[in-house]
Image (tube, rainbow, N blue to C red; front, side, top):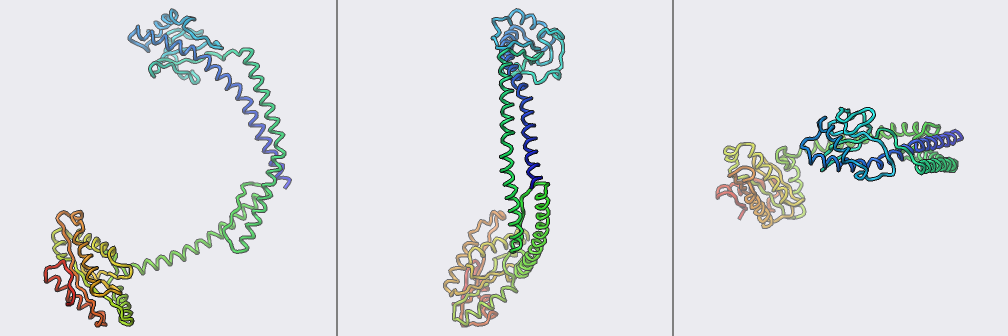
Length: 411
């Protein structure tokens, strides 16, 4: 525990001293930078005004000849009256946007070509949001007595702040030590919860000391254990999911999503047996898409498949959750409706017939129209599924023979 406290106090002391040194060294530089910018502002405004006057009198700007002419023009116009007074005076170098010197300095004459690369973040001189020149100080700004006093006050303040920060390290270290104790308690509690059966436990301790090593070892062990358990659970779930998918594939028609004929026969037989035992009404319906061969021949088999899919979607939307519909073969569908007498079956099938007839088939293929015929057997005296299917098929044949797009039932 002592090693942790020593490390903590050393880290806080080092951080405090490092930050204090950075701020102590950078603050005077930043203050001088602000003073330099302030000193350049009057000069920038004066050059903006003078360059604007020059451009009004001369058609060109940016050539060495312009730079030389401007230097003479500026000597006559850029006088003390046109320069706003600043609290600091600083010598500067001014060049046009093409790099030609606009002023005389010990090293350059007006018109000399100067690379922008020699400047350290030069200030821009703009007229109508267009850069016409750059200005940069030649040397550091001279500090006045008040500036030096201000910098000295800042340095003393920083020193005092650093001492205060160091004085706060010891209580902060004690507080941090309490956090470390809490981390140890966290680790103990996590181990106890694992022993009680709650396997997934992670202790958030990021350190390289003894507690950190112990926490990392615990987390690594727990991760492997949980992953192994999770993989086992996922494998079990995957097997269950695949089994469900295989079962669903075995009972569903691939194209329409309806139940297939084999599943229908199994479920329908069970529903019919229950209806017969408890004397409940039950309707069996066979339905067939009218002129389906002509749809395939005139519009293509792809359109025919879409018709089957869309008809199936309509059927699934319109039936009740207790009803059963399946693809019986080709374009033929079969229904079984528990607790449904003949009148209710007619009403439901006629509603479905109208939904199919009124569906916007032209969106599937221009000129396409689809209707469906239905044959119903709701005779509760018929106890065999095959016999009911045969009677429904007879009524479907009658619906086809009498003009299609209708529902027929035993009279």
